[in-house]
Length: 175
Image (cartoon, rainbow, N blue to C red):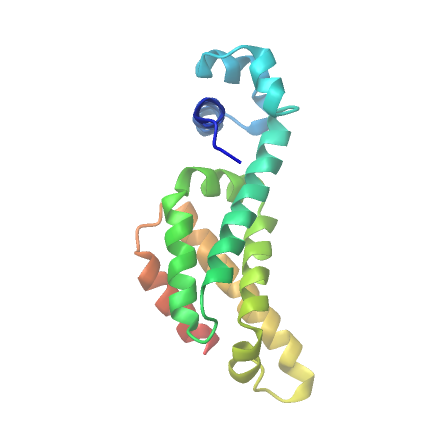
């Protein structure tokens, strides 16, 4: 199916306007009217693509998951650091959208990391699950949520460190 540049442009100005408004006030205070005025589009144009601002967030979340899944699917799971570096480079390249989605829906980061864990499962069995049986599950959860916290902090702080630095650190924790 051919890309329609007009549709892409319209969605881009809606996204940019919505993100700009989110920087000024909480999501529950943003109206479709404000988004449309800032984007210089009609309300009917907004409603052609989204039901409301929450629908925009939901669609953005799905797009972030899809983008992350595509990256994860392309990478050989035997090198955790390479996989994480490429994933974090993708997040950084789409910083505005990812940061808004992560800020408003913290579960997305856990979902992306779960996709990663599925891909790297065989490697993780060798690296993460080395404790006696009773604490395996606890250690796994500790590492998952710890890594998720590090990634969330990295995003919140404006991604000052390179994706490679963050990936190397997290890979060292996992291994």
